[in-house]
Amino acid sequence: MPTAHPSGWAHADGALRANRPGGPHWLREPRDPDALVPSLWPRTATKDDGVLSVGGVPLPELVREHGSPAYVLDEADFRARASAFRDAFASYDVYYAGKAFLCTTVVRWLAEEGLSLDVCSGGELAVAERAGFPMERVGFHGNNKTVAELERAVGLGVGRVIVDSFHEIERLAELTRPLVEEGSRGPARGPVGVMVRVTAGVEAHTHEYIATAHEDQKFGFSIASGDALEAVRRVHAAPGLELLGLHSHIGSQIFDTSGFEVAARRVLALHATVREAIGVEMPEIDLGGGFGIAYTTQDDPSEPAQLASEVTSIVEHECRALGITVPRLSIEPGRAIVGPAMCTVYEVGTVKEVALDGGVVRTYVSVDGGMSDNIRTALYDADYSATIASRPSGAEPALSRVVGKHCEAGDIVVKDEFLPGDVRPGDLVAVPGTGAYCRSMASNYNHALRPPVIGVRDGKTYTVLRRETEADLFATDVGVS
Image (tube, rainbow, N blue to C red; front, side, top):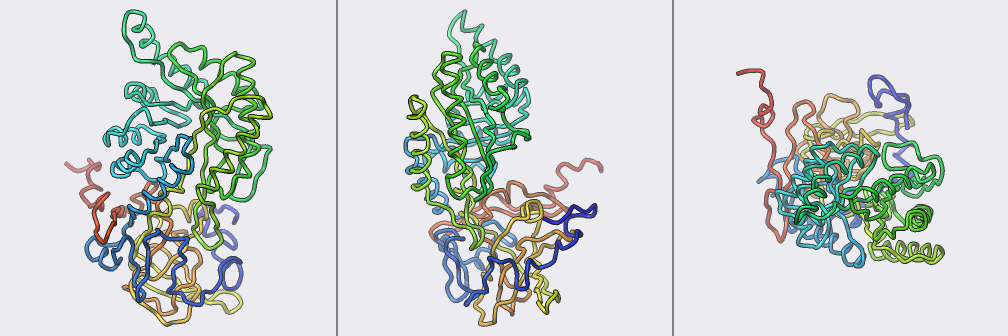
């Protein structure tokens, strides 16, 4: 990563230089820049004479009806991925990550597909409530839940609250005290289910697994320091709280289960210690998840069935070694459900060629969106792919960089991609893998209007989230009467 610069990362030495002549090592010049790489796109995506269709809808037609930029959500693909995780992890509770992308339509799909829902804010909880989602299937995460948020969660009867600090345990115990007192006089709601988030000392970044020196983070109670065991003691001692078990999360964009081995060993060892030290058999464990998706050809995610088999084998092996019963398990696929189910379509506004070292020329393709609808490239140095979506081309592939329209040098959507050399204004460019964390992290930077989310299925379109208008921008601006 380039060294930080006070004017932004793009000003640092080497930040905008090609990784090597022709792009990064994994990027191969395609024989046909019009062709789709199926692993990157929703399962219904096809190309016919250069025109990309998703859910049976040609994207040029979608743009004519709904404008650009637009997020395109493939309902059939979303449901297929949700059901694949549900079926593969049939003996688990499968929690969808609300933070990846959430709206009432998606919450309804989750309810119909039999998944549970993980939320991490009062706003996400409000979406679940508005959609009528079964609250007993909701888990409430977050390292700094407010008293108001906890009170709402308790009042709605969420299935579990994942506690993250001693302060939160105190707040939750205090909020549930009236329920306990009411119970002594007559009928009362049952205790609030609680899981204790623990830090197992394992951090997973794709294929790199490191088992030490990862206690320095804001999430969870450290197993190594003894804080996790103390948190379990306090939850168990609170009359209004029901101790459900431990929660562990080792990372995100994980492609295999190697990183879960050390984490499961440490979390299950604590589970066994709780039984011996406190005398309680906790019924559940959540091992997190954060399974990866393919953003580019360098990514090779595992199928849900393989992940389920390997995770289950790890847990059963560790439980046998510890002589304990396998608890009820939960898993959180993360971006793996919605991430590949959505793509973003843009219109090209300008094209320019820039000479790089070694005689390499990079084509800068400016589109009508950018970091306001996908901040991940600028924020995380994330890689994406792209294709021309509106016409065929027989031109030779050209090393290209898809950039946005914002007043920011780091406003990059796709750092490196081979697009047809005749890309021109008016072309549509589609970027796959934008379902997770793109719309949910979108902003009004430069007072941009956030794009709509357009659902597609069986050749038809429908609006999931409408495009913002200038009236939305001024709705909170009270400076002029």
